[in-house]
Image (cartoon, rainbow, N blue to C red; front, side):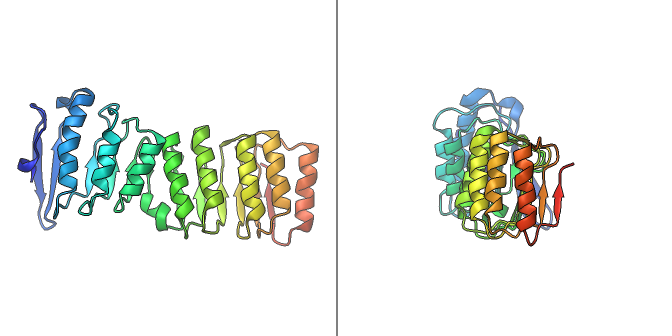
Length: 279
């Protein structure tokens, strides 16, 4: 129903195509005709009106690559996603520069959202809400993505595996994700932090999570850059944890004498840990 969209700048062209048998109509707005935040805003408002219109079937919205948004644009989109008639499941706002709170507001409002792209990683919102396993696929995770993941983890009741291996997580992103894990309702079985920079503060959060865990079977820190205090805290809290640890990966870590003693003590007291890998 492209003809009903109003307020689009002159020079922006609509292309409508129908896929036979699926009754699917796709509307593309050519990026070359859109200049700056003013053009984005002019598109956003009529599109948001379309999202909230009763009976609409708009499920995929890609607005990425159009530069930073103006103040208030995130709130406009969140309000549209929260409309009772909104069925948007796939949303791409990469490059918009939305902050952490604005990103969380989009997910909170978008009850039908299944995926959200803010940067490199297409976040599997649906899986984070109700799936069992989520991986970042080695892609960069910024603070806004970390805030969304952390918020969704707090409400998760089913996720058992979180894999951040190989991803470049911003420090604030990793902190938010770990905080979300610590407060979540579900029981985590596998935590993979390969390649992450784990500072003392993050180590304290991981340690507290492990100390309280009764379900963790795999902890992977291989290739991570753990601060000495962080690694010590993680190992100490793991030693007093009731978790049924079966595998601990420490590849690439500088394990000092004191930390080595903790690992040895952990192995002696554990009834389930059969693999400790340091390379």
